[in-house]
Length: 324
Image (cartoon, rainbow, N blue to C red; front, side, top):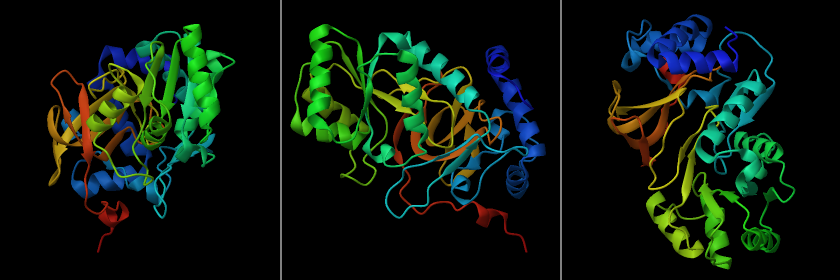
Protein backbone atom coordinates (compact mmCIF):
# COMPACT_ATOMS: atom_id res chain seq x y z
CA UNK A 1 0.00 0.00 0.00
CA UNK A 2 1.50 3.31 -1.06
CA UNK A 3 -1.27 5.86 -0.67
CA UNK A 4 -0.10 9.41 -1.20
CA UNK A 5 -1.17 12.37 0.91
CA UNK A 6 -4.08 13.28 -1.36
CA UNK A 7 -5.49 9.77 -1.05
CA UNK A 8 -5.13 9.74 2.73
CA UNK A 9 -7.00 13.04 2.94
CA UNK A 10 -9.78 11.82 0.66
CA UNK A 11 -10.30 8.61 2.61
CA UNK A 12 -10.12 10.37 6.00
CA UNK A 13 -12.77 12.93 5.14
CA UNK A 14 -15.01 10.39 3.44
CA UNK A 15 -15.26 7.71 6.16
CA UNK A 16 -12.64 7.55 8.91
CA UNK A 17 -13.89 4.28 10.42
CA UNK A 18 -13.96 2.49 7.08
CA UNK A 19 -10.46 3.75 6.24
CA UNK A 20 -9.16 2.72 9.68
CA UNK A 21 -10.56 -0.79 9.36
CA UNK A 22 -9.12 -1.14 5.88
CA UNK A 23 -5.72 0.01 7.09
CA UNK A 24 -5.87 -2.27 10.15
CA UNK A 25 -6.58 -5.24 7.90
CA UNK A 26 -3.67 -4.29 5.65
CA UNK A 27 -1.26 -3.87 8.55
CA UNK A 28 -2.34 -7.13 10.16
CA UNK A 29 -1.41 -8.87 6.92
CA UNK A 30 1.87 -7.03 6.26
CA UNK A 31 3.28 -6.27 9.72
CA UNK A 32 4.30 -9.58 11.38
CA UNK A 33 4.87 -7.98 14.79
CA UNK A 34 1.45 -6.31 14.80
CA UNK A 35 -0.14 -9.56 13.62
CA UNK A 36 1.45 -11.59 16.43
CA UNK A 37 0.33 -9.04 18.98
CA UNK A 38 -3.24 -9.04 17.64
CA UNK A 39 -3.37 -12.84 17.77
CA UNK A 40 -1.97 -12.84 21.32
CA UNK A 41 -4.81 -10.61 22.56
CA UNK A 42 -7.50 -12.18 20.36
CA UNK A 43 -8.18 -9.18 18.13
CA UNK A 44 -6.86 -10.38 14.77
CA UNK A 45 -10.23 -9.79 13.06
CA UNK A 46 -11.36 -6.28 14.12
CA UNK A 47 -15.03 -5.49 13.66
CA UNK A 48 -15.09 -1.78 14.48
CA UNK A 49 -12.96 1.08 15.81
CA UNK A 50 -13.12 -0.18 19.39
CA UNK A 51 -12.16 -3.72 18.32
CA UNK A 52 -8.98 -2.77 16.47
CA UNK A 53 -5.82 -4.00 18.27
CA UNK A 54 -3.79 -1.05 19.59
CA UNK A 55 -0.08 -1.81 19.76
CA UNK A 56 1.51 -0.78 23.11
CA UNK A 57 3.86 2.14 22.55
CA UNK A 58 6.65 0.22 24.31
CA UNK A 59 7.08 -1.97 21.21
CA UNK A 60 8.80 0.97 19.52
CA UNK A 61 11.52 0.74 22.16
CA UNK A 62 12.30 -2.86 21.35
CA UNK A 63 12.45 -3.04 17.57
CA UNK A 64 11.54 -1.17 14.41
CA UNK A 65 7.80 -1.43 13.82
CA UNK A 66 7.45 -1.74 10.05
CA UNK A 67 4.58 -2.60 7.72
CA UNK A 68 6.11 -4.14 4.62
CA UNK A 69 9.78 -4.19 3.75
CA UNK A 70 11.59 -0.93 3.02
CA UNK A 71 14.71 1.09 3.68
CA UNK A 72 13.68 3.99 5.96
CA UNK A 73 14.32 7.50 4.69
CA UNK A 74 14.69 8.47 8.36
CA UNK A 75 14.50 6.90 11.81
CA UNK A 76 13.11 9.29 14.39
CA UNK A 77 14.25 8.70 17.97
CA UNK A 78 12.66 9.94 21.19
CA UNK A 79 14.48 12.16 23.66
CA UNK A 80 13.41 10.54 26.93
CA UNK A 81 15.36 10.91 30.14
CA UNK A 82 18.83 9.66 31.02
CA UNK A 83 19.01 5.88 31.14
CA UNK A 84 15.74 5.31 29.28
CA UNK A 85 15.58 3.19 26.14
CA UNK A 86 14.45 5.53 23.33
CA UNK A 87 11.59 4.82 20.97
CA UNK A 88 12.52 4.55 17.30
CA UNK A 89 10.16 5.16 14.38
CA UNK A 90 11.18 4.06 10.89
CA UNK A 91 9.76 6.56 8.36
CA UNK A 92 9.57 5.29 4.81
CA UNK A 93 8.56 8.59 3.18
CA UNK A 94 9.33 11.96 4.78
CA UNK A 95 7.25 13.79 2.18
CA UNK A 96 4.12 12.27 3.72
CA UNK A 97 5.18 13.64 7.11
CA UNK A 98 5.86 17.08 5.65
CA UNK A 99 2.57 17.22 3.74
CA UNK A 100 0.41 16.38 6.75
CA UNK A 101 2.46 18.69 8.98
CA UNK A 102 1.92 21.76 6.82
CA UNK A 103 -1.78 21.16 6.28
CA UNK A 104 -2.31 20.42 9.95
CA UNK A 105 -0.40 23.50 11.13
CA UNK A 106 -2.15 25.84 8.71
CA UNK A 107 -5.53 24.34 9.64
CA UNK A 108 -4.96 25.70 13.17
CA UNK A 109 -2.64 28.71 12.74
CA UNK A 110 -3.16 29.94 9.20
CA UNK A 111 -0.37 30.45 6.63
CA UNK A 112 2.99 29.34 7.98
CA UNK A 113 4.58 32.28 6.14
CA UNK A 114 2.87 34.63 8.61
CA UNK A 115 4.90 33.35 11.55
CA UNK A 116 8.37 33.90 12.97
CA UNK A 117 9.28 30.62 14.70
CA UNK A 118 11.49 30.68 17.79
CA UNK A 119 12.27 27.18 19.07
CA UNK A 120 13.43 26.50 22.62
CA UNK A 121 13.98 22.72 22.58
CA UNK A 122 17.17 21.85 24.51
CA UNK A 123 16.49 18.17 25.22
CA UNK A 124 15.54 17.58 21.59
CA UNK A 125 18.38 19.55 20.00
CA UNK A 126 20.79 17.37 21.93
CA UNK A 127 19.67 14.45 19.76
CA UNK A 128 20.22 14.55 16.03
CA UNK A 129 17.16 12.55 14.98
CA UNK A 130 14.25 14.09 16.88
CA UNK A 131 10.91 14.20 15.07
CA UNK A 132 10.07 17.43 16.94
CA UNK A 133 13.25 19.14 15.75
CA UNK A 134 12.53 17.97 12.21
CA UNK A 135 8.97 19.29 12.50
CA UNK A 136 10.12 22.73 13.61
CA UNK A 137 12.88 22.79 10.97
CA UNK A 138 10.23 22.25 8.31
CA UNK A 139 8.00 25.00 9.72
CA UNK A 140 10.97 27.40 9.79
CA UNK A 141 11.98 26.55 6.22
CA UNK A 142 8.45 26.81 4.83
CA UNK A 143 7.78 29.98 6.82
CA UNK A 144 10.80 31.69 5.29
CA UNK A 145 11.19 34.30 8.04
CA UNK A 146 14.85 35.32 8.45
CA UNK A 147 14.50 35.81 12.21
CA UNK A 148 13.22 32.28 12.85
CA UNK A 149 15.58 29.81 14.50
CA UNK A 150 16.54 27.44 17.33
CA UNK A 151 17.92 28.43 20.74
CA UNK A 152 19.89 26.12 23.04
CA UNK A 153 20.05 27.94 26.39
CA UNK A 154 20.86 31.19 24.55
CA UNK A 155 18.72 33.42 26.69
CA UNK A 156 19.89 36.91 25.71
CA UNK A 157 19.57 36.41 21.92
CA UNK A 158 16.17 34.75 22.40
CA UNK A 159 14.87 37.56 24.60
CA UNK A 160 16.20 40.13 22.14
CA UNK A 161 14.37 38.41 19.30
CA UNK A 162 11.13 38.19 21.26
CA UNK A 163 11.31 41.90 22.04
CA UNK A 164 12.12 42.73 18.43
CA UNK A 165 9.04 40.82 17.27
CA UNK A 166 6.88 42.64 19.79
CA UNK A 167 8.22 46.06 18.74
CA UNK A 168 7.61 45.29 15.07
CA UNK A 169 4.20 43.71 15.65
CA UNK A 170 5.21 40.39 14.11
CA UNK A 171 3.28 37.19 14.72
CA UNK A 172 5.77 35.08 16.66
CA UNK A 173 5.38 31.47 17.73
CA UNK A 174 7.60 30.53 20.67
CA UNK A 175 7.75 26.73 20.61
CA UNK A 176 9.26 25.25 23.76
CA UNK A 177 9.49 22.18 25.94
CA UNK A 178 8.03 22.76 29.40
CA UNK A 179 11.21 22.93 31.48
CA UNK A 180 12.87 25.34 29.02
CA UNK A 181 9.87 27.68 29.03
CA UNK A 182 10.03 27.66 32.84
CA UNK A 183 13.75 28.44 32.68
CA UNK A 184 12.95 31.38 30.40
CA UNK A 185 10.23 32.62 32.75
CA UNK A 186 12.77 32.59 35.61
CA UNK A 187 14.89 35.08 33.64
CA UNK A 188 12.34 37.13 31.75
CA UNK A 189 8.83 38.50 32.25
CA UNK A 190 6.83 40.21 29.54
CA UNK A 191 3.39 41.21 28.35
CA UNK A 192 3.17 39.62 24.93
CA UNK A 193 0.80 41.13 22.40
CA UNK A 194 2.02 39.44 19.23
CA UNK A 195 3.67 36.28 20.58
CA UNK A 196 1.97 32.89 21.02
CA UNK A 197 3.58 30.32 23.33
CA UNK A 198 3.27 26.69 22.20
CA UNK A 199 4.30 24.18 24.86
CA UNK A 200 5.31 20.77 23.60
CA UNK A 201 6.21 18.26 26.26
CA UNK A 202 7.10 18.22 29.91
CA UNK A 203 10.17 18.33 32.10
CA UNK A 204 12.18 15.44 30.58
CA UNK A 205 13.78 14.81 33.96
CA UNK A 206 15.24 18.36 34.08
CA UNK A 207 12.82 19.80 36.67
CA UNK A 208 10.08 18.58 38.97
CA UNK A 209 7.02 17.59 36.95
CA UNK A 210 4.23 20.16 36.82
CA UNK A 211 0.60 19.48 36.01
CA UNK A 212 -0.04 21.07 32.61
CA UNK A 213 -2.71 23.37 34.07
CA UNK A 214 -0.25 24.70 36.66
CA UNK A 215 2.50 25.10 34.07
CA UNK A 216 0.24 27.06 31.74
CA UNK A 217 -1.05 29.27 34.55
CA UNK A 218 2.52 30.12 35.53
CA UNK A 219 3.54 30.87 31.93
CA UNK A 220 0.46 33.03 31.38
CA UNK A 221 1.38 35.14 34.40
CA UNK A 222 5.03 35.38 33.37
CA UNK A 223 4.34 36.40 29.79
CA UNK A 224 1.06 38.33 30.15
CA UNK A 225 -0.92 35.84 28.06
CA UNK A 226 -4.59 34.78 28.23
CA UNK A 227 -3.73 31.22 27.16
CA UNK A 228 -0.80 28.95 26.37
CA UNK A 229 -1.12 26.55 23.44
CA UNK A 230 0.02 22.92 23.40
CA UNK A 231 1.05 20.34 20.82
CA UNK A 232 0.37 16.64 21.36
CA UNK A 233 2.67 14.41 19.38
CA UNK A 234 5.21 11.68 19.89
CA UNK A 235 8.02 9.91 18.10
CA UNK A 236 5.73 6.97 17.34
CA UNK A 237 3.22 9.16 15.46
CA UNK A 238 3.53 11.25 12.32
CA UNK A 239 0.56 13.52 13.14
CA UNK A 240 -0.04 16.09 15.85
CA UNK A 241 -3.03 17.41 17.77
CA UNK A 242 -3.09 21.04 18.92
CA UNK A 243 -4.68 22.84 21.86
CA UNK A 244 -5.24 26.59 21.54
CA UNK A 245 -6.27 26.95 25.17
CA UNK A 246 -7.57 25.16 28.29
CA UNK A 247 -5.49 22.05 27.49
CA UNK A 248 -8.17 20.65 25.17
CA UNK A 249 -6.70 19.06 22.05
CA UNK A 250 -8.36 18.75 18.66
CA UNK A 251 -7.29 16.13 16.13
CA UNK A 252 -6.96 16.61 12.38
CA UNK A 253 -9.39 14.54 10.26
CA UNK A 254 -6.86 11.72 9.79
CA UNK A 255 -6.28 11.25 13.54
CA UNK A 256 -8.59 9.94 16.27
CA UNK A 257 -8.12 9.38 20.00
CA UNK A 258 -9.96 6.68 21.94
CA UNK A 259 -9.65 5.53 25.55
CA UNK A 260 -9.41 2.29 27.54
CA UNK A 261 -9.48 1.30 31.19
CA UNK A 262 -6.01 0.96 32.70
CA UNK A 263 -6.80 -2.50 34.08
CA UNK A 264 -8.24 -3.75 30.78
CA UNK A 265 -6.47 -2.61 27.57
CA UNK A 266 -9.14 -4.28 25.43
CA UNK A 267 -12.01 -2.22 26.92
CA UNK A 268 -11.75 0.51 24.28
CA UNK A 269 -14.35 3.31 24.12
CA UNK A 270 -14.82 6.38 21.95
CA UNK A 271 -15.13 8.64 25.01
CA UNK A 272 -14.44 8.65 28.74
CA UNK A 273 -11.40 8.67 31.05
CA UNK A 274 -8.49 6.25 30.99
CA UNK A 275 -5.38 5.51 28.94
CA UNK A 276 -5.34 7.04 25.49
CA UNK A 277 -5.28 5.06 22.24
CA UNK A 278 -4.34 6.99 19.10
CA UNK A 279 -5.31 6.26 15.51
CA UNK A 280 -2.91 8.03 13.14
CA UNK A 281 -3.82 7.18 9.57
CA UNK A 282 -0.56 8.64 8.25
CA UNK A 283 1.32 5.81 10.03
CA UNK A 284 0.77 3.63 6.98
CA UNK A 285 4.26 2.14 6.98
CA UNK A 286 4.62 1.52 10.75
CA UNK A 287 1.48 1.00 12.84
CA UNK A 288 -1.50 3.33 12.76
CA UNK A 289 -2.98 2.11 16.05
CA UNK A 290 -1.01 2.99 19.19
CA UNK A 291 -1.82 2.37 22.87
CA UNK A 292 -0.02 5.18 24.71
CA UNK A 293 1.03 5.55 28.36
CA UNK A 294 -0.89 8.84 28.62
CA UNK A 295 -3.89 9.17 30.93
CA UNK A 296 -6.59 11.49 29.67
CA UNK A 297 -10.21 12.14 28.90
CA UNK A 298 -11.85 11.90 25.47
CA UNK A 299 -15.03 13.90 24.93
CA UNK A 300 -18.01 12.94 22.82
CA UNK A 301 -16.95 15.36 20.06
CA UNK A 302 -13.53 13.69 19.73
CA UNK A 303 -11.49 16.36 21.52
CA UNK A 304 -9.38 15.22 24.43
CA UNK A 305 -7.22 16.25 27.37
CA UNK A 306 -4.03 14.72 28.78
CA UNK A 307 -4.06 14.38 32.56
CA UNK A 308 -0.70 12.66 33.10
CA UNK A 309 1.13 9.37 32.59
CA UNK A 310 0.62 6.06 34.30
CA UNK A 311 3.11 5.70 37.09
CA UNK A 312 3.85 1.97 37.12
CA UNK A 313 6.38 -0.05 35.12
CA UNK A 314 6.16 -0.05 31.36
CA UNK A 315 4.18 -2.75 29.62
CA UNK A 316 7.06 -4.42 27.86
CA UNK A 317 5.86 -5.41 24.42
CA UNK A 318 7.80 -8.50 23.45
CA UNK A 319 6.94 -10.33 26.67
CA UNK A 320 3.36 -10.46 25.44
CA UNK A 321 4.41 -12.47 22.40
CA UNK A 322 6.33 -15.22 24.23
CA UNK A 323 4.65 -18.55 23.73
CA UNK A 324 5.30 -21.85 25.43
